[in-house]
Image (cartoon, rainbow, N blue to C red; front, side, top):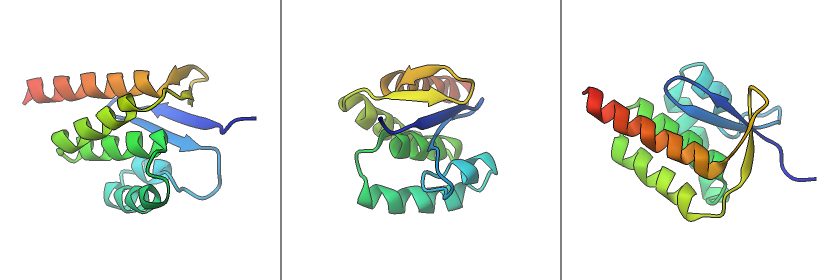
Amino acid sequence: MGRIVTIAAVAVAMVATPAMAKDRVGYKAISAGSLSQAEATLTRERIIFPSRPELMLNLAAVYARTGRIDQARALYGEVMAREAVPMDLADGAVLSSHEIARRGLARLGATIASR
């Protein structure tokens, strides 16, 4: 049985989280608006697991929400450069990590255009 990952689609960002009690992917912190706490958690976890797409996607979401568009774009690009991984959405749908990254990139384009 593979790793279960849940993605919560939020108007501003897509947030990924594995089903576990401890918030090691920043999901709870992002949902609560504690972006600095989420960033600290995600940065720490990426040192241990640099290739996990849910960490990259969540950190990209934090960067996007804090105006660091270039850094968000780079992380979405890293996800796209790796093998696609199926991810469960909070609504029960399943998307690949590539599709989530594409949507994040598209959202960044809309963010830049609205400035």
